[in-house]
Image 1: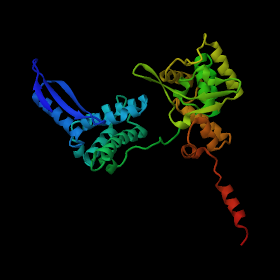
Image 2: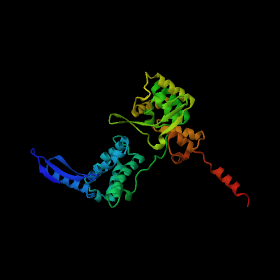
Image 3: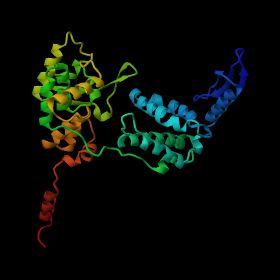
Image 4: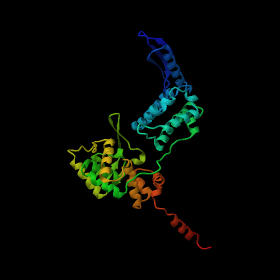
Length: 357
C-alpha cells in the first residue's frame, strides 16, 4: 500500500490485495483530508487483510457486513444494521475489538438498561435481549473466523429475556366485538378476519394474492411475506421453511375471501390484495379496540389469539403448529400455560399400570 497527495490537497491510498479467488487486484481510496487519516485507513485495511484483530470495532463491522449481508434476507439485515448503527457503534466504534473488556460490555448494558425515551419508557426485556444477542453475535463471528481470543459479551451474560412475561391475546368474544366495529371498513374487516381465523403472520397476510386462494378446495397457500423497507415493497420467502404451508379455511372465511377478491376491480391473480402496510393495521387496531371497548393488543398478538382459540378447542400442539407454520415444540413451550393440565390423569393411569402390590 502507498499514500499519495492529490492536486486538490487531499490524500489517497493505493492498495493491492488478493481476493477470495486468489487473484491479485488493485484499488484506490480517495478523499482523505490529512495524511494521518489516510495512513490510519491504510493500517486498518492491512489489518483486515491479515485477519489481525488489532482493528477498531467500527472497522470489524465492515468485515462482518461483507461476510453476512448477502446471506440474509433484506429485512433481517435491516434490523441488524439498525441495532449496529444506533445501539453498538456509538459506544464501541473507536475501541479496538481485541481490547473490549467484559467491564465495558457491562457499562454498555447499564446504558441500555437505564435508557428512557421522551415519554419515560424503557426498552422492553425482549428488546434488551435482542441488543445483547447482536453484540454477542459480532464477537462470536470474530472468535470463530478471525481468531479473537474470547467473546466478552458471552462472559458477561445476557440482559433482558426472550419473551415478555405475559402473552397478550383476545378471547373469541373480544375478537368478535372488535370485528363487528370493523365492518364499516370492509378492507380492514376482511384483513383482520383472515389474520384471526387462520393465524397467519402480518407479513404473510400483506403478501397474499388471488392466486393463493383455491376456493374449490377451500385452501389458502402461504409461500411469501411482505415488508416495506426504505420506501420499497419487498416480497421474500416466509420466516422459516416450516412457514411454507397450505391452510384449510372454514367455509364462512372462504366465502368472505371470495367476496372481497370479487369486489376488487379486475384483480390481477399475482398482485397483492391488501395494498397497505402494517402501520395502517396498527391505526385500525387502535380505532377498533377503542370503539369495541376491548383491550388494545399488538397486531402480532392476533396470532396468539388464534392459537389460544385452537388450544381451547382441544387441538394438539402438532396440529396447531402445522396450521400456523410453527415448530410443535415452540407451541408447547410458548403456550404451555394454556393447555389444560393432565397431571391428575397421568397419575391415575400410572396407578393402573402399577397395579396392586
